[in-house]
Length: 283
Image (cartoon, rainbow, N blue to C red; front, side, top):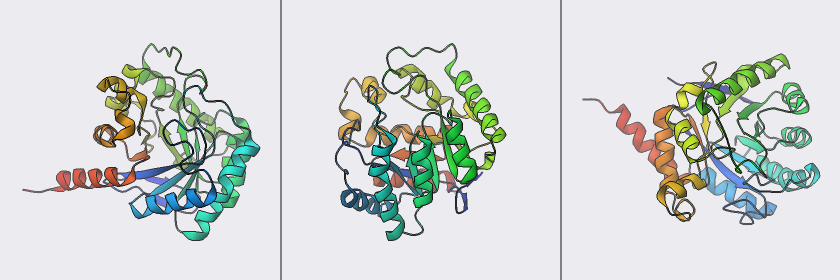
């Protein structure tokens, strides 16, 4: 079954084999690629490369949200991301562009500059963010996070992580609708690694479908996450090879994820195509 997602400029029918969102961190301090694409020219080049590799969306962020990260002012964040959004929109008018931000002022400026999606790690906690997304109708990624990036991994606690994430989604979708955001514009992200320990992350991947509300599309952002290094007893493994991310993303796809947010686009695009071919094979 294919689900649709209403974005700023289209109602996108998500591909049956799974869609890929390419990560573009325009930051000096992101946890695995900080500084690699810092600056408009380098960022644009990498965005175009990911599109050529098969990315369906480019997600542009100007603030690191790794555990322990310091906050960045909205002005600094906007100065990093807006030139990249504008350059990519000029170069690839049809590209789907997401802005990864928790600041309403940055989201507004990004949407006016050509972004189609707001990817908010706070799950639309801010009334100002909800107002922006209602006034400038766009796709919205609503993510679950326990705590704040600087302290979220200190000691995350849940009674039932699956039920609590599902209840969070239900409450936040209701709040968004009350503030004028059509639920058809919302995609859900359980926030792997955002206030979760290893077992929380693994359980959310395995039981992903149990967290879905209102039959909304679901995104999994597993790329280079530290919990995979903990499972493998090799902290560097998820950073030096795309294999852990690919394997976990395929498991997430089997569990119901329609979108996958990754640094390494080509390996996952190929893996999802192989998975789809196998599922579509007939005897």
